[in-house]
Length: 157
Length: 292
Image (cartoon, rainbow over all chains, first blue to last red):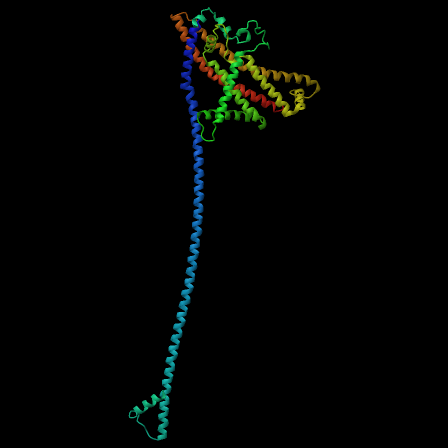
C-alpha cells in the first residue's frame, strides 16, 4: 500500500471536484439566488412605487377636490353677482322707463292743457267780441282792432 | 515522513479495515480498554463520530443563526437568500405533512436542522478519504491511529437520530391522542377492535414502529457507508503505486476518473439522503398526529 500516492491522487480528485462544483454546481445555485433576490427587490421597489403613487394620487385628488370646491364657490359668487346686477339693471331701467313715461305724460298733459287754454282763450275772446259787438251794436273790424284784441288776449292770459 | 508512516506494508484489506475502524478508547491509546465486543456494545464510544457530528452540528446551527441574525425584510443577499430558500422549502414540506401548526413550530425547525446537519455530515465523504486521517496520524505521531470522518457512515449516529425521531413520534402520539387513545390505537389498529385481535394488533404496531426506525437509520447509514467504502476502493487504485511505471500511472488516472465521477454523483446522494431522512422524519411525526 502506498498512502502517499493515493492521498496525492485523492487531493487531485478533490481539486477537480472543487473545479467541477465551481463550474457546474455553484453557478446555477448562485443564479437562482440572484434571480430570487432580484425578484424580491423588484417587488419591493414596485410596492414602494405603488405606495408613493397612491400618496401622490391621494394628494392630487384632495387638491382637485379643493379646486373644484373653490371654483364652484367662484361660480356661485359670480352667478349671484350677475343676478343681483341683472336685478339692479332691471330696476334702474324700470325706474328710467317710468320716469320717461311720466315725463312724456306730463308733457302731453301740459300741451293738452295749453291747447285747451289757448282754445278757451280764443273762444272767450270771440265771445267777448261777440258780447261787445252786441253791446256796442256795432261791428268791429278784426283787422283794424287786432291790436286791441291782442291786448285783450294778453290780459286774459 | 509519510513514507515512514506508510512503509509498514499495509495490504488492501488492512487499509480498508483500518479505515472502517472507529476511533475509540481502545484504538486511541488505551489498549487495555475493550474493543467493540459485538454489534451492540454500550461500553464503547466512537470519539470520531462524536467529534465530527458535534462540530458539524454546531456549524449548522451557527450558519442558520448567522442567516437569521442578518435577516432583513428587504432584498436578501446570496447567503440570506440561500437560508431563506431552505427555510421555505422545509416549511412548505412540513405544512404538507404535519397538519398541526402548534407541532410545526417545533417540528419544522427541527427538520431544517436535521437536513442541514446530515447534509454536512454526508459531505465529509467528499473530502479526500485519507486526508483528515493522515493529518490526525501526523498530529498524533501515530501511523496506526484511526479516524472516520463521516459520522453518518456510523450506525450509532444514524440510529441515534432515527431513535430520536421514534421518541418524538411516541411523544406526539401521546400528546395528540392522549395516553388512553394511543393505547387504544395500539390494540385496535390496523386489524380491528375484536379482543382476539388485540395481541396481533399490538405486535403489528411494534413491528411497524421498529421497522420505521430501523429502516430510517439503516437507509442513511447504508448509503453513506457504501459511498465511503467505494471511495476507499477507488483510493486503493492509487495505493497500488509502485513507482513511475505504466501500470501505476494508468491506475492513478483511473483513480482520478473514478474518484471524480463518484464524487460528482455523491453530491446528489448526500443531498438526497439528507432530504430523505428529513422527509421521513416529518412523515413519521405527521403519522403520529393522525389515526390509522
